[in-house]
Image (cartoon, rainbow, N blue to C red; front, top):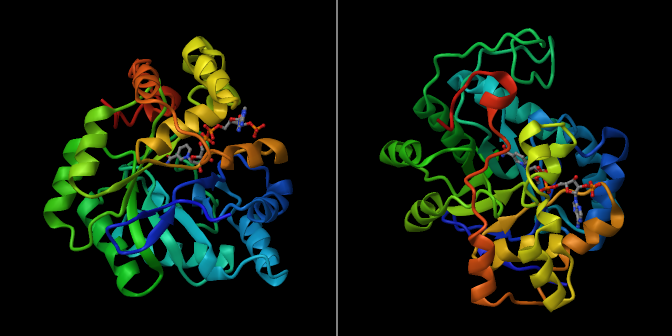
Length: 321
Ligand SMILES: NC(=O)c1ccc[n+]([C@@H]2O[C@H](COP(=O)([O-])OP(=O)(O)OC[C@H]3O[C@@H](n4cnc5c(N)ncnc54)[C@H](OP(=O)(O)O)[C@@H]3O)[C@@H](O)[C@H]2O)c1
């Protein structure tokens, strides 16, 4: 079944529903990607930091070999990790990531966080994570976002990425980036769920023609696995009476309502599941429409509650201050 797409400002079409690869186990990642392609997923949202790009690529290669899809049917996304923001580091690491996936271009390559960290050589540790020593020493590099973005633009010019985007950027930084960008970001990927709606950031993106991809659409759920206190303290969105009521109305699950709430408002979603049934369920969200009053009621649950905040897990890098 053909999935809805979003037309990007780069001219390319991006599937509106994709599959997120964060915390997809290495041992099962290739099979999960293969099965997701079989189930109809065409967009995969990967990253250096997820540590499973080789396995994801194996799943893609097997699906292509078995004739399930061609490379051009897929929309493969990856991200530039913070330790590779220095201008001269961007192309080499992107090429390494392409080699890990076993492909020669990304459909979309994203600056993962607006934070430049000190370079860690991949032969020392890969993926490097947030610290320079693999323990707790967070050290910043002096690269500006302009330096990094200029290097990102050259990836498009050289054919390594069809579109480039940003993630975890806030309004004023986006406005500044647009002043010097020769290639505008095609997408902005942000944490977005009913507890963190960020309406003014969405308005800015819309006004500037930047498509928004919502991550962690299920709110606290993803962060319970990491034992984040902020997630443990928040009521589960899956049990919230407003979400449950809308789900009952449509004979859908709360998870499907959370995803449809986002796609109906024009956002792309990239849910992750290690479970084959839930993986299929998360794709089956195009056959119902939530009434405007219910969309508004769900948006009304906003608490400006962010789970993915580096300050909380590193005690530093106050990028959402
Ligand atoms: N740019 C960034 O900084 C950033 C940050 C975070 C995430 N992301 C991207 O966004 C993707 C999605 O975000 P996420 O992984 O944080 O969280 P998510 O998709 O909101 O939630 C995943 C959690 O929900 C469970 N789940 C999945 N489908 C379900 C369903 N239908 N019913 C009930 N539970 C369900 C999963 O468990 P099971 O696996 O057991 O089903 C897992 O515990 C990531 O994989 C990644 O690609 C990007």
